[in-house]
Image (cartoon, rainbow, N blue to C red; front, side, top):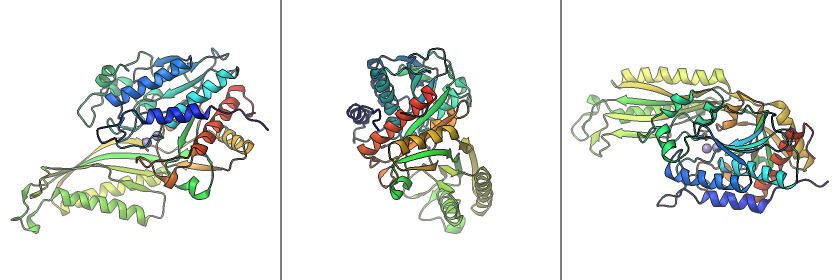
Length: 414
Ligand code: HGY
Ligand code: MN
Ligand code: MN
């Protein structure tokens, strides 16, 4: 049976081209939200939208949309989205693959004279990674009504900048009201960023749910003192207290025999000098679990440990919540469409839970949504070694093509 197919050369070429934009002096890919390097990526993406003859719209939080009304004018659109901002020293596929595959699907259908019953839109959401401005998935959270846009634009970044000022500075403080299009459906194609598909030799993941996320910033205050003259018993060592939190989190997650994961990704000491006992430690805690009750138990256990630690080490401890998202279930009809598309193409497919956060979890608040995963080599992501083979990238984009056709015509994919 012959199937439609995307233009693999165009897609793979664009993934490589976008992956080359936003490299720092050491050659690392660092395209943080609303930064100068992300501005270059945004402009390149918009140039491809214009090349494809799409209407370009930017909303007030800087989300970019490429709109193909086709024959479906007036109907709710099918939105294919993800993000093009990255973490620090990132791989080239996280987010970008889904956005560029979405554009590729639209360009392929347009060139074949396909007549969709719904407009089809590709979206690049602002600040999905949350590295510079918390929380993550911010652009899609605002778009879906989970965060007020004025409040979001006032967010102060880790570098002291204000998101709204930075979006204006790079020319992406758009005028459309977030949420200006309510999707008929939303589909996001993404690399798995985990080891499951590769380990099981499965080409396609039909993602039916996504785990809960809890982000906190912890500040521990002790006393700076001389590293050489201060007896251990007299120390109020913020650095040592922070280390006890890190081992507490790891030991607890490891002993739990559940999918709970805990990560301390950022840490800073003050005054940060080799011969001074740290007076202050500031670090982040990322807790995740597919089960909301268990995630709450982990948060409660951490709070209790911090209380004990404060009296044990005679330090002051304060906590700031940076993000909190409950687990999300995706739309079963779209998940079935993904499975049917994989079967039609003779590709093995597996239902999965997403360990990572994605824009789909936010858009699921306003429309039926689901995700398609393709394998990540070694399960590696948020790392320049992130890799997915061309065969898997093209296969995933063709599944996206079939699912969008199915949604656009209300029938099974051809
Ligand atoms: O944090 C996440 O899971 C996503 O990469 N923003
Ligand atoms: Mn991503
Ligand atoms: Mn990511």
